[in-house]
Amino acid sequence: MKGKTVFTYLLTALMVGSLLMASACKSTSTTTTATSTTTETVKNPDTFIEEVIGDPQTLDPAAAYDTTSDSYIELVYNTLVVYHKDSTTQFDPSLADSWTVSADGMTYRFHIRTGVKFSNGDLLTPDDVKYSFERGMVQDYSGGPQWLIFLPLFGVNSSRDANGNLMPLSQLTSAITVDGDYVQFKLDAPFPPFLQILAGGYSSIVDKAWCIAQGDWDGTEASYEKLNNPAADAWPLHEKMMGTGPFTLNYWTQGSEIAFTKNTNYWGPKANFTSIVAKDVQEWTDRKLALEAGDADYVDVGVQQYSELDGVPDITVVKGLPTEETEGFFFTYDISPNSSFIGDGKLDGGGIPTNFFTDINIRKAFAYSFDYNTFINQVVSGNAVQPDGPIISGLTDYNPNIPKYTYDTAKAIQYFQAAWGGQVWTNGFTMTLAYNSGNTTRQTACDILAADINALNPKFHVTSAAQQWSSYASQWDAQLLPVFVVGWLADYLDASDFIEPFMSTTGAYSQAQGYGNATTDALINAAAVETNTAKRQADYDQLSTQYYNDCPGVMIEQPTVNRYMRSWVKGFFYNPAEVTDIGCDLYYLSKGN
Image 1 (tube, rainbow, N blue to C red):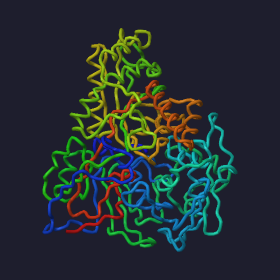
Image 2 (image 1 turned 120 degrees about the vertical axis):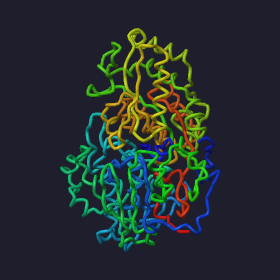
Image 3 (image 1 turned 90 degrees about the horizontal axis):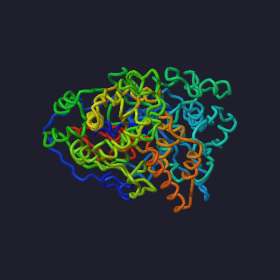
Image 4 (image 1 turned 30 degrees about the vertical axis):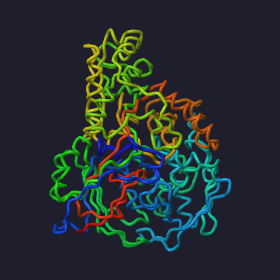
């Protein structure tokens, strides 16, 4: 997820060192510090207020693929199953109250809870469940999360083939069937992480009748063709929400704040809060003052600011939390000529051409130019490790012996001198690195890379520039950013969830970069469903090594994180698979002395 996507680490440096598979099963904080607040007057006791970095990209669960969006989607919508608190291997019933899995692992059958109402009063039906998954696959947003549904159901990553031809609607609607109060999923092959996928926000259940009334897919072929991969301003549910979850959308002032109120029709125990308010506050000092004053209950804290809140009265600090996320630089192979980050667009010292990063020498030169140790030890104060390729510690098929790049100025110069037949070294180049505003860690990473490259040759002129998070992803999707730095947070704790977005021709990042090919896609798909343990490991080792050799991007950290909140916040737990800014479902929280 971007931020999978991606965004919890937008906080600390913001979304492990010692992540093992055992720690992936249950999170454990290394240190918890709290100051007694028995006499403190709780501010706004019925409202949870958070100040975060960035706005949701969308409110449509079928399109959302960043942690900020998902943080709010899970307030309004429910999925069939949910993670059991801080476990990443145990699941609790939600809209499905029971389920079975066939002996061959290819058929999942769910009994849909009866008597559940959407917030508008409509009764939930099994047909709503079937529709929810099919409408997502019908729309299949480019760079979105629907590959997570297509892969287990059909063994492909998209509704569109390499030539842009649509999967027949009859096929798309064949894998999920309704049988009375039951909904059944027929998988293309055994896929052990399937329950993890069903717990993700992209598997949220929507009201079929309400969606159609909003202009969403109406079940017809014509509607399928019209809505498949719609333009960003044509997403039917982009600014609308209506689900079965504990809250309803109150308002969304884009670029400012979003608010929710308690759902009076909620089928489960009512939420402790009457309302939740999330504010987009870019400036760290403003977030810090709000937390210290009690005007915010939780705020995003960058890793460089951790020490500023240690020992502050009435603030609870939970330290050393593991993440299943990696952060890296990604190179765009086919940069848009409309980019404002490439200077004059020529290899004459005043810019870079749009195909600059198609030269492997350039990509490797950049990879060898980054001072990884300084970044980890000084910028993030040791709260991270350098990843061993795209498959990080804590995932299945992790291999610590995959090669990784180091800071090596001699090799960087060697590759720069070889790039573009020597023109890069002779003429120099000018370009801009991009990061999302408010993320000081990403800003510093860009500054380090720029400074390290510029120090190699006085004709090299690399700078960095901040972009608003709300437009950042759309810019890299449009190939406007020659290099972008971003994180990926696990959708599910399996190697396939990281290889797909980084290496597939339809991957969330690789597609935008223009990296990938049909042969690699075939291996990615085969590895994901491989049941032979040794063969699966060999496949993923081959893919990880290929990523190192091709160098379409370079991973710079797998972080650990801290969480800072007012000490009156109760019920916090942490789950590395919980793709929200705070790291847990706000539904479980309360406030009190």
